[in-house]
Every structure is written in C-alpha cells, then in structure tokens.
Picture (cartoon, chains in turn yellow, red):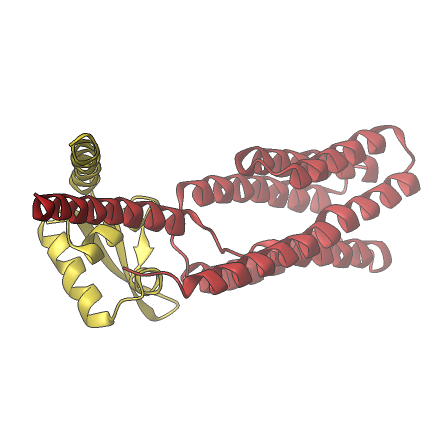
Length: 91
Length: 208
C-alpha cells in the first residue's frame, strides 16, 4: 500500500507535521492535483490519513493528518526496508 | 550468475532510493519557512506608539487600545500566512508560549492602565519580566542564542527599573524595545528571507 513513491512521500511528510494543507503537500511533492488527490484518497481509504475540510477567511481549506495506524504502517515499512537492505548488503 | 547479481543490485538500488525518499521528505517536512520576524517589529512599533500616546496624550486607554489593535492586526495577518504552512508540534509549542504571555501582558496592561495605581518602574519591570520569560522559553525550544540574548536584555531592563528613577527606567525600556523588537525582528526577517531563498533554490530538485 505505501510502497508507491507518492504515497510513501506523503506519509513521510505527514509524519513530521500535526496537519498539512493540500497545497502544501502538492508543493512539497511536485505532484499534480489529480494524482495527489487520488493517492491521498487511497491513503484515507486505508485509514492512514484523516481529512478535515474547513473555511479559513472564507476560503476552503483541506487538511490532512496522519492517523496512528498510518504512523505504524510507515514505521513497519521502514523497518522492513532496513532488513531487506541489510540482507541485500550481506547477500 | 551475472543476471542474478544484476537483479540483486537493482533491488538494492530500488530499496536505497525508497529509504532516501523517506529521508528527503522528512527533512522537507521539518523545514519551517514560517515568518514571525514581522510580529517583533510590529509589536516594537506598537509599544512606541503606546508609550508616546500615554506620555503626551495622557490617556489611560493608550495601552489597551494599542494592544487590542495590534493583537487584531497580528491575528488577521498570521491567519492569512499560517494557512500556507502546516502546523508542527514545535510551532504549536512556541505559539502557545506567546499566546499565554500575550494574554497575561494584555490583562496586566489593561488593568494597570485603567487603575492607574502602578508606578512606571513597576509597570516596566513586570512587562520586561514577562517578555523576557517568553523570549527565553522560545529560545530554549528553538536552541537560538540570539533570542536568549533578547530574554537577558528584557530581564536586565526589568531588574534595573526596580532600582532606577522613572526617567532612567523609561530610557532602559525604550532601549530594550529597540534592541529586542526592532533590531531582533529585523534580523529575524533577514534570516527568514535567506532561508526562503535557499529553500526555493533547493525545491527545483524536489521530487516524488
């Protein structure tokens, strides 16, 4: 699920902040609106991110924050990567 | 045999690229480009306006009106600017310190100005001590020596005004505002502009 480059980048970014706006995530990942929206929806459906839509100074704002299971999935992914890399280096 | 080694090498490169992507994104996320230098300059100017108004205008409402006006202006501009940046735990911690000290300063300035029972030296000592505390707490979180120097300047000003005359305390207060608000705020704005420029240059290499 999180092996996809953009989804992995998004979870890594969201792990460093309390919450982030769609436009900030788009700028940091240099992705298009459509691709970013689709990948965020997949992460939301997997329960890795939460979405909040609100208005700030009459402008719509979409905020994303990482869930506990998203954080756990990223941690497990990094551990698995390190193990595989260790095996690749030793092998 | 060679094909097997090539496949292993490719897999290793792929895994390394994934790990590198995670590291890059975490570093990107932690970079803060928020701008707060302007608030120091704005509040420095506001203190000067309040001092001038209360001294020459002889108004008990100089401090409360200036503080309320500046608070509203700060809140509106900060809301507009912060909507572009995500909230970090560190940002929330620093924001909490300044909001708490700001509320304490506001209640104190409002009450002291309307009551008119506190002498100038005590007023300066209390304001200086509170601003010193906010700068010190913020500098400890940010590990920023320059801001801790501001805290020391405010605390020294607070201590001096406990012993000095009204006119001497006023001079010390005006000097502290100039150093810790105008000069430090200007320095902060320059640092933030440099940081933004370097991030813009680097963003060309950002990928996902």
